Every structure is written in C-alpha cells, then in structure tokens.
Image (tube, rainbow, N blue to C red; front, side):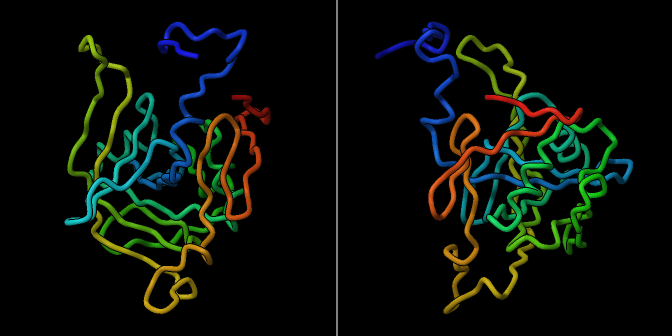
Length: 208
C-alpha cells in the first residue's frame, strides 16, 4: 500500500495512521503559567529531547493553545514525567478546558513550586524539568504556507527527581514506568498497551 497524505483511502484506513507509525512517543506533560498568573497543565504527544549539551526539550502544539501561548509570552514551561501512577491525571488534563481555567485546580492535581521558573510543577511526578524558552518555530509546509502548528524549544534550567526512583546512581525507568503515546487512543505501558479515551470538557469522550 502507498498513498500520499491527501490520498488516503478512508474506506481502508478511516483514521490517519501517522501517529501510530511514529510511535512510541514520550508524553510532554507541560505545565505553564499565564501572564495573569493562572497555572495550566496539558499533555503533548509531539514532544522530545533535542539536545544534551546544554539539555534542551521541545513540544509542538497544533494551534496556539494555552501551554504554547503561555510559554511564548512568559518564556518558561515545565516538563512533568508522565508515569503509570499518574496516567489518569495526565489523561484528564487533556480535556479542552476554557482558557483561564487551571487544570491543577479543576482536577485537584497537587502543584509544587519550581526553583528557576515561575510555572509550577506536578508535585507527585517522578521527575520534572524546568525550562526557559530559547526558540519558537512556526512550521510551514513544502509550499511555504504556515501550518498553524508551533514548536517551542526550551533549555533545561532545573531538574527535580523523586529520590525513590534513583537506583545505583541512575534514574530507574523500570521503577518510574513511563506512559508513552502510540496512535489513535492507544498508550504504551511497561506491561503492554491499552486505549484511553480523551475526555471532553462537556463530559463526553473523543474518539480518534
């Protein structure tokens, strides 16, 4: 089978397979603070490390959502480690809350102070990386047209690790049990994978 992105036979592939092919992907559980001081928390599946010296991370937003807007306006964000013990909280924070609503407050997720940035972090996360924005990229397609997506790159300025996840001088991923993003409604776990619907603000759930 071969097709271009615009010629997919939807009778055979009703859902775009791209995100399932480029998988697993780490989840960028991003916390930020608006100019008005409202904390925001949301997971991003377009996320990864982009450098080691200095350590740098990126997350991309399809459309300028609260996390991206806050990061651009304040120059800061925090990556929170998405692990199995926080999967429900992580997934719940994907709901399309109205701008100005704090997911921390709305969902009862405990926040903790950061040290090098103003944005809070998830208190119960295995690890968190404080970041200051270094680059903002508005992506374009092959014809030079803006796609509406925005990529935020930040340099890590602070590292938090829950010491119970350190073994023999290393951050033990087997203990931390990260949740990864696959495709459709699928998420990867240390013992396999299963579907996890995204919640809607009105109480509904979203299919792929």
